[in-house]
Length: 128
Image (tube, rainbow, N blue to C red; front, side, top):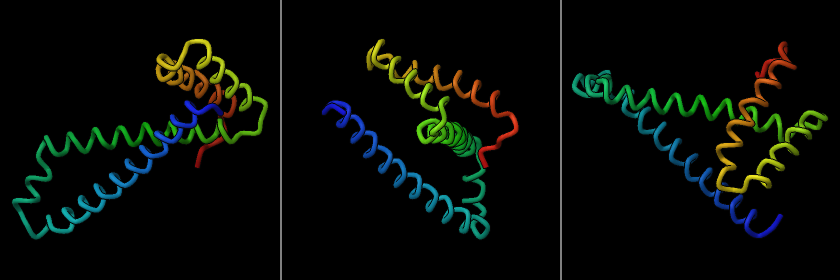
């Protein structure tokens, strides 16, 4: 792995650590609010208003999407199967050919189509 790739991986690692810490803090704050809400009618009303609920729905949706993606990513990257290796090679070739700027868009598109193929090949297998 060259220095630039290692630097990118280090940045991703740091972002994951920061996001994880932020999510834990959000969970703790929401938990405290939920415990206080039954005894505070004004807080209960504020927490259930549309702007607050919309924000929580957006967060929930993003976390659900990330959970699905991470499941797929771990399956592909840790799979010792021939299909897993082909998928990794395909992703590496796409990144090399089209450059880093387009990689995010290509990876999403590739991962979507690969996931559909993977699920079609493993219809009876469930992630959990």
